[in-house]
Image 1 (tube, rainbow, N blue to C red):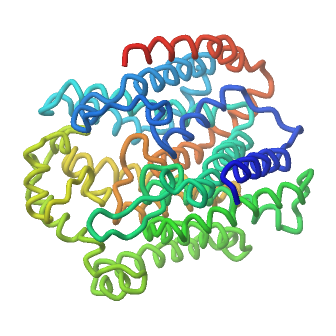
Image 2 (tube, rainbow, N blue to C red; image 1 turned 45 degrees about the vertical axis):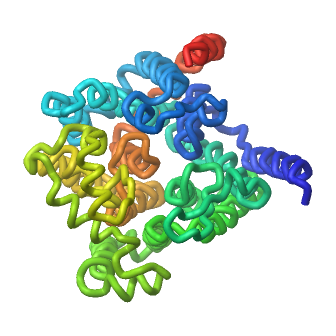
Image 3 (cartoon, rainbow, N blue to C red; image 1 turned 180 degrees about the vertical axis):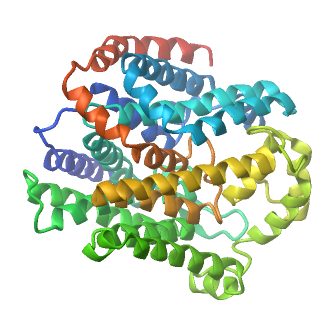
Length: 475
């Protein structure tokens, strides 16, 4: 098919998915487009890339970033904060129930004090709060569950079909080659195959959750059939992308999350929560034992990979010895800014120029030491406890939240996902915060009041292009 014809077909198909998925019975705030736009960019490529204004020097980009991207994210953050100010009581209610998350973010900011790059670290630690701002915009909506559904659909209906379009008809953008083996890789709209894998997997869990809900005999949703068709189509596209991306970590994490969503839809699990605990323990134990307790070689070979997990074992053993301070680490987002450390790691790994540890727990250890790892463990333990409580109140809703928490635990075994602006980090925090009882009260309170946040967005939206254009002139 001619690429221009394919463009037309895909645009019509995307529009059709939005049309089939429409639901006029609910009203969400205009502010919901802020996190959608945020995920569109995080799940694809920087705005500067799409505008052809990216920095030419990679080292300079790592330290300072692109002015265009800085302006873009600054606008989203400012508008997002204006929205949250209008929703003050609801925001405070959610934050007060999320103490471990707040402690972690504050520790990240405090770690600037011992960073070798305090300016960059401080800027990034402040920027990391933008993840939290976007999550709160979704969960303080007048209908938070409906807002989350729309976040899934609006994000996935753009990123996943366009990824398939790029892979099939724009190989210069949608494909790449491994510089060591020459093997062809598929990245779609994302920068690399791992990013395509993770954004696909987190969005697909939402599609799986909705498909199972529509298939239930007692589901009385309006326009059930066309919504099911839209979500089913999205699920098929996503499974295809997971397969071609060859991101085994995302594939395994998606499988774990899907099993949990399916299990939490069973009456047996709903009556006996202890069985759910046993299933979670079994799934995590199987993955950990397959990777690290003697089954690593066979598990890797079964997935078509080498027993060292693409050289990760060498990377891990080298990085553990390079930690500048075991107690508090190098400082937030500072370890990989040290050129000496990167050169030493490159020598040990045969010349690989890395910017992550390929293990979320080790990544936190390098940046924030054992204190940071302890705070991450506290977030996970408290998050799991809260999602189980949400499951007891509402099994359908709680099942999705549990799937995100447990699959994030699995994902971070071989990929660094506890990082700012990483999709799995965002959805992990979203699941934990969404498990609070306060989400239900937010929905009730908003139904009694006027949503002024949408008005804030509409007023500021007219100035976005002007500010962006002025920022681009400085590039």
